[in-house]
Length: 234
Ligand code: CA
Image (cartoon, rainbow, N blue to C red; front, side, top):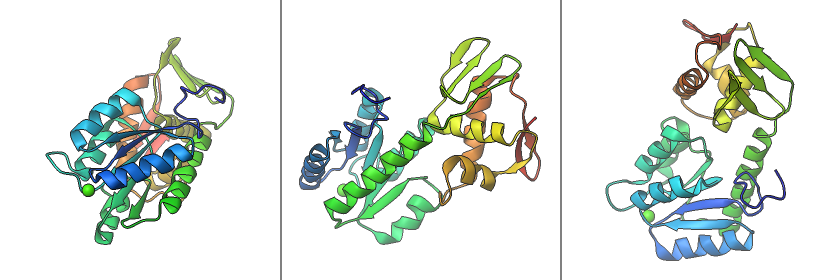
């Protein structure tokens, strides 16, 4: 993946969407991110952010919780999460919101509380980008289930020879099931395995991703729901 400046998984030159309505903070973030070699895009509202998100496919989102207008930070996060596993670092002025942000509802990857040190935030940005780059480079052999062919080396899935477009997290979930084929796994095990230890979030996230994987790969994938437990690849 190195060498292609258009690759959003690159740590250097990563496209980063900054959603922040306070101009001096947005400018500061813009400056620090550029100094670190990233390519920031700034949005001062949730509405603008969703447009930019669709246009730019950022590798990371910095999201201020308190935004003016109809789409606040929580809603922007929800809408981004509905279609994407992009890492999100929330910026909040209220430390009593932190549990909601990373605890269960929203699945943000990390957070900082205002006032924050830009240096500390840049450290978090680098850590999150490194984690997601690592998650995207899991290697392994090729596995086939009927017409579904899963290539753990190229991180590619085809259905009857046609490439299925899986999000990085969907592939990670699928690959974790492949590695434990025949075993019933709890949602918690799947979260720990595919999202990484220490990922704190709602176990229903797993259901959402399983739905996507089933929808994209179809009936040839023997992904069973195990009542009262979780899922099993047969
Ligand atoms: Ca704000």
